[in-house]
Image (tube, rainbow, N blue to C red; front, top):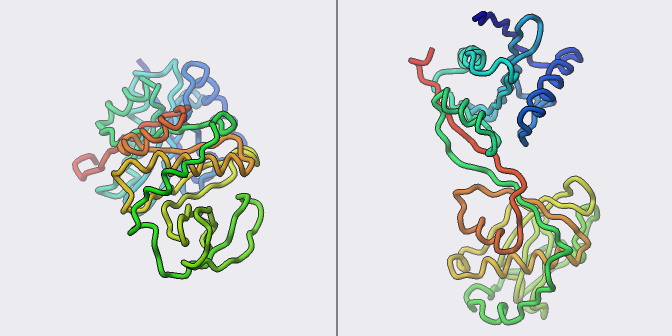
Length: 297
């Protein structure tokens, strides 16, 4: 078996290389569709490409994340798998990294072949990241007045003045007006936008019960939800589901349609809240870790 492989390393991709990559991605996707995308425009990426007879048959984009930490994925032409080409490309990639570097290998959770590749390089699975979605138009009206009445008094009382931006309705494309909220305000519950742009669910005189962030995603009516944080005094008491659904109802009334979020499988409480609230997993990506030691050179 001829295992000759020409390996090239590039920091930027010209039009010919992009065409070669597009062609290999199309062939691989036709054979096994995956949700992992190729980082064409990643500034801190080096592209390691393997050619055989002037045809691109395997590739590894290696992204610098931080000192000693890298991220990569891999594609191999279906006709040239299990022939040692990926291992050759991987060995070449490792020689470009400093000792004791950590490489996170990303794989579509539905890809058995990707899982096999991770095993071949002795990478250990560290977690699975789920992308979840929910159609906000399908959720029922949610007015949990009883819930707000049973919150601990120690949590919902404050003597501090909170400088905020009001956001009613919440709109990521518009700037909100300023307002000073104190413990003398009569508002029982409201959502505000702070100077740092995170949204805060406030109850009873401006006490922060939860925080979250949103950005437009795919379209103006679709949003990506992240940075969800619940007041520490309310954790482990079963309040998370009700707080989260109150926020969902607010986002629905603000005119948003689809909501997307990501959660790791290790975050069991959050995952359960999202599933109970009606979210579905639409993509799942596995993260494997390989630590480069000196003896691997």
